[in-house]
Image (cartoon, rainbow, N blue to C red; front, top):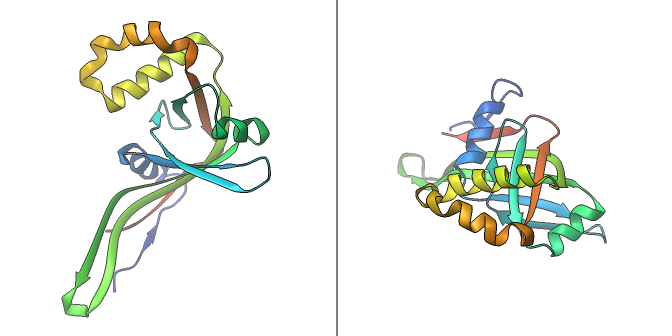
Length: 160
């Protein structure tokens, strides 16, 4: 039987960050004002080993959650392959996953907002960057940018 491998904190944080980068979306879990959980998939872009950004409308439930409690949890799966192993008569799944915790904050600085939006656009739509400046001019004032700063190194697991 294949063993699940848990990664060591420091050395393998880079691997866990790669899982977060490769995932098409990352589930970010918030805490509602009534203390119930609220998780949703978001398109995050990473600036460095501790900083992620996402954008959204200027109001909504996730923003209410952040105002009430800025702590968040991130989880992602970048590879998921269900498999039946005939030789073992076994159902299994091969995966790469990562989790992290951090603090979410609203970005107020205009230059940081533009930098965050550039990172997001370069990650998800790099071939359309020629339209970036016009989009910024049109929508910067109506777009909320949230920075998530990790409070500890991310961890990952995989079943190769």
